[in-house]
Length: 313
Image (cartoon, rainbow, N blue to C red):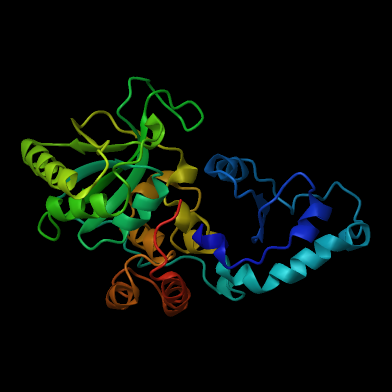
């Protein structure tokens, strides 16, 4: 995952701290998260079972470094990476009063399933003409699916876009270009296009036929009419942006799942923080998004750092 690529691997220290866990260790502002790298489900487990490190007032104050010298070594090794989550002077900012959350234009919906939904959330969210995005579950018969009890649903993304700025055909191009439509995966990650009207159906079926001619293996993508879209849990929404808690606080979207789904600026930044969109696009619109100079400098550094590294879930 992008957010962990720059972190050094220290297997010997990990063995001392947690012999049963391997992977990346990240020290954030309030949490220490050991993230196994073997499967996405293990990452979800760590994201949903974090424990605060600061609420220990009832415990006698014993020097952690005295008991576990390797912890001190780990903290020192990772101190140079903490700025990815919170600049040292970020506390000077409380919120961004001009953050552009809502854009009042007529929109249409597009719904796609293209494997893990974190990647397309960043991809489409940073695309000019897209107003907002949200991830969820779609296509199955089970009521009220959850990540842990998905039933026969598929991970999907719902995109609200301005048809005067971007066409449905352009969204289809992004769909086809950013996943493998021949991959035979379990239902959770299969490839689907859910059309919302006859025009979308015709466009989707046309591109499906075109794609069949360019692939040696048969496509698994299915074009289907839109059905009920079940929103995913809040921790999945704008997942990349949520790895930068101080940005979420500035945008007033921390612990506000509905605003995370509705916010225009959140959709944009969710892509920018992993390099989607590119530096030139960011320079053109950061002021319009309502960022201040400090936030802009921070996001710009991430766009520059991760540009061109592709989408990873």
